[in-house]
Amino acid sequence: MIKFRFEYGMILIYLLLGSGWILFSDELTELLAPNPEVAAHFQTYKGLFYVFVTALLFYGFLRKHLQKLRKAEEKALESDRLKSGFLANVSHEIRTPMNGVMGFAELLKDESLTNEQRLEYISVIERSGERMLDLINDIVNISMIDTGQVRLHLSNVDTSELVTSLAALFEPAAIEKGVSLKFSPCSGDGMVGNLLLDREKVICVLSILIKNALKYTSKGSIEVSCRREADIVRFTVKDTGIGIPEGQLEAIFKRFVQVNMSYTKTYDGAGLGLAIAKSFVEIMGGKIWAESYQGSGSIFNFTIPYKTSKDLIK
Image (cartoon, rainbow, N blue to C red; front, top):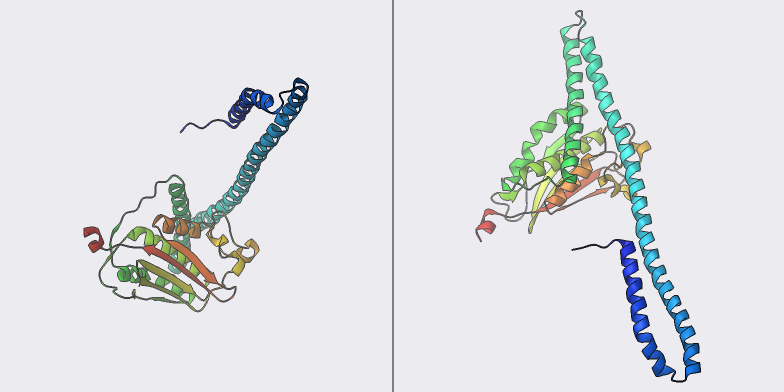
């Protein structure tokens, strides 16, 4: 479809209105004012009427166009502001673990270190490397989402096995923090057989939610479960952490945004995880939301429509 520039459209409308008015207004004048003297006055008012009508039309068109331009400008300014904040945050997130790697690598050169000290320094380097790798993965995922390179890869998935398989990945971190981590097999009517899901993306979303729960939960428990409901499967991550202010439950899923910076400044992270989780869930045709009150823990749910092998045969 050919799109005309705004100014070309305005000129075209003006020409059409003017031509139409010239062609038909004279005939209208002859019908309404057969007397020459009356017709002369009518011609004057006819011109004023044309100017008045076209002025109103052009005002309406220009006002609508300017409103779009202002909204686009505001959106661009907001995007620049958020990206600037994001870059500042990312630079901090890279610099901090990099300092840990460089600093403790230098300390390892000391030959007088005991084995325990060496193991401790190596552990710090490993954690710093993992933190940088997580950030790089987040940036890569964001880039793939923006460029439309994310594709669904459906396979037969045992959802109970998928959920419980994450225990080995996150139990060490939970034990270190003194937090109870529970993984429950999937429940629901007719929960028999595998479901056709994108296993990799489901694991990615669950991992983001579990990491988020571990970050903000210093005591208590984290529960991970799933349930089959009609034609969807629901995954839930519930924690007893610091919670989220009710008015900010939607903002946490926005990219480049951190909820209440003064409130979360003691926690690491670039603020991309939940935005990535939301994008992946939506790509899978589902939805994600949070339920929480500040100081009372949080519950994150996401649902995904599924099919079975029998559905494909049909």
